[in-house]
Length: 353
Image 1 (cartoon, rainbow, N blue to C red):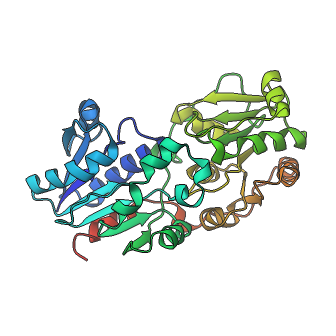
Image 2: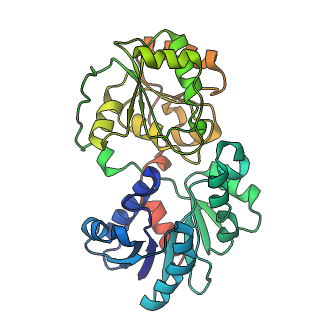
């Protein structure tokens, strides 16, 4: 089978998009070594993409924007190589000349536009009409399937395929200690820093819980992205005194060490399509406190404790209880939460269904 893959994010895209691409392409090559994969990437990413996947054919495009590359370039490449299938991320190709599948991370911009900047909303507004052009729409969770269907009635086929853990964060990957931190001396939260991640309430609750201080801080990992959030004076004071420390982006080896050695992992996002960090943390043995939202009950099940992300007092109480107990909630995670096989096989079947 010949498959054209939108790999626009492969080298320097959003962290979650980059990870999904790398892991799914790797899984595809392992499961179907005789398939021919054609990766369409920005011209600036051609060399690194060939290093990452030398057994594929890498095709560079000068298209400056991801939607433009998908709408115009993917069908052109598919015609040229006589492809059996096109696989895209978020933005489906416009042409229906060949079967196509698009993986949509989420449509939260439709349900909660206030969480996004005007520029982000304009950019993402192309996503819904293009979904109707795809033979099949894939997303991560059943919760997101319901959201897509309820706001995009003309989309024909939507299926949840789950996501896996990155190999670089797997059980056998390397871990690198973070300078200045002692094991079991810190709380941890991870994710892109924007209003949806609810960092203000997370910090407020950690301070109110009385479990953090300069020697036992809350560690925040992630880079700013999208609409920001103003911290309260109390949260700003905690940052200034060192009870809250921002590390920015860290290597996967450092991230693994942080997951493995935190006293408690916090993920109080207002909502997600999937939410990788709490799954990564739980998979590496961390005690997890997540938002009481349907998607997390689906992906984490009894492998986490929950709190209303809007209720600072409730979050603080849970933090205090979990840190004092020093015991994981019931495990294991739901089996559908870990793995890449379903994504690959469901995408591949689109060419023949």
